[in-house]
Amino acid sequence: MGIDNLPIFAALKGKMQWNEARQKLLAENVANAETPGYRGRDLKEFNFREMVAKSAGNSIATVTTQPGHIGAKNGAQGGDFGARAMNSFEITPEGNGVTLEDEMMKVAANQMDYQAATSLYTRSLKLIRTALGR
Image 1: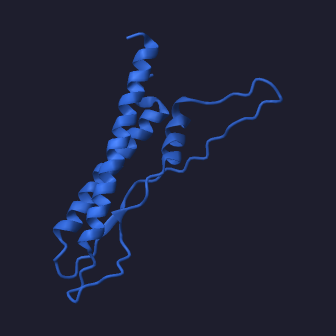
Image 2 (image 1 turned 60 degrees about the vertical axis):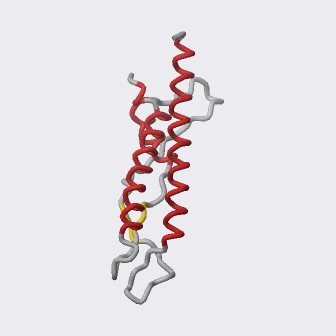
Image 3 (image 1 turned 45 degrees about the vertical axis):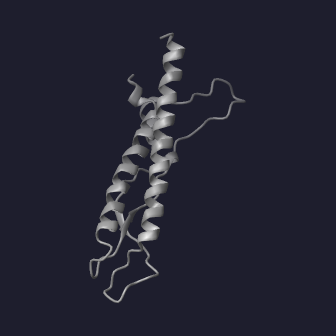
């Protein structure tokens, strides 16, 4: 079993890919902030529970060994992170629905989320290396 098959690593990798895709969309929104008729787009929220359950279904299963044990079930429903139109409350006379301040706040939050995911990924790798004695 490779490290990418572990549920936590698969979920963190998925989160980092989601942040990358969101950063591209947010950059498009900022670039088109003054384009007449342009409506900003964003991604649906990333769901860790779905990612972990989807990857756990492939590699790890729980087993009850005695009648008193409680079994765990995976109820994962996969989903891509496709772009969707944003609900813009401020529309310029040209029909543009992008607010630069909001977009820059989203960019900053996205960057912090990405840094948190990479930090968790790195620390998890260090823990596994420590456990293996390397």
